[in-house]
Image (cartoon, rainbow, N blue to C red; front, side, top):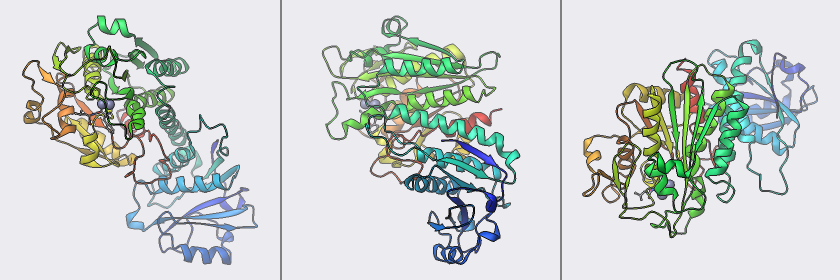
Length: 488
Ligand code: BES
Ligand code: ZN
Ligand code: ZN
């Protein structure tokens, strides 16, 4: 799929399908040349009424073979997701029609921000055209090329290129996160990281089992010891030529979470192949950061394990020593994410003295109970960082909601026999007690934790969006890249 930005008037564009946006109850298609308004078009415009995500395809005998009208809804209610959502729908229609290419007219009215619009068109189209079909012997139709028509083509060329790289980052995240657990082990993830690093001149270090143990990564070692697919700690470094403190990104990558000795019930256990989504998010971000050559120092740290039951597994009752020297009593081997993250967070803080640490993890089922499957939980120790993240989240429509973390929650993970225990009290505030465990792994670096258990892949209660087809969603990639760009 190729995307081009063209300064061509809509009636002069030779294309299989010319697509224009319509605001509810208006009698015009944004940017569509008046000569293209024939009777069927005018009637269709009245019929569809510009209602949100309504579309209609009208045959045309001009240079365009068809004209597609796409509703954006009420003017005062057009959200920062509307163009992304509707563009995704347009792209899917084009694919169903098996078109080789189609064109979208970018709205130029002052109520639309040009840069935001072109970003949303590109994200919506690219993300909705991605399909995980690696394991289908019969592949679907190839994705059509896209022309974006705009009189301001020069102004938006650069933003469009950035949007493409960011969308590709999210797609990369999805494509790895969707891999089945027999095909994607910690070793596979490490190899993906090495590939990305090589292509984009990043430094990549992988710490293997023996060394992890020797260096005191007690959490990663304990969780990883039950599987013959050995644990890895993957580190990617972008920039680092200046002395500027880096931003450290940490992502949970449990390539399969059976629960270990505290085995999960069978129902939906297959979904635990998505327990590596946090790590995949970090990989996708690092790929895009390096392709964009962002002038910030960013380090990605991905602790990766497979959580399996077996003769060598860690057990409930075990007491382990984490990377920062604190001890943890294991009361449930299914609360494994916090153990591997604690090691990675402490390591990140110690070795990089970062400006900020941001972590992503499919950490708790409790987060789905609290916030559902369309909003990620966030927990932070820093107001400023949190506000920046919330601002970015609004721009990229990756919704977040803050949960509190005060000392009373910290008390809930105190152990009788060790510094901490790896679960809280019963099921109370499960997402927060997990975050409390992570909080203990860092000293005072500004930190924000994303619990993406509900949003990292599509589940029964997930709101359907054309740009979020079934499977991994790549949640967080666009958000963090927006945040990092605003750091400059
Ligand atoms: N990976 C799971 C969390 C999860 C569950 C994510 C369902 C998405 C959907 C995590 O490792 C886990 O099992 N957490 C336990 C913690 C509990 C034992 C304190 C949970 O949420 O039940
Ligand atoms: Zn678990
Ligand atoms: Zn898990």
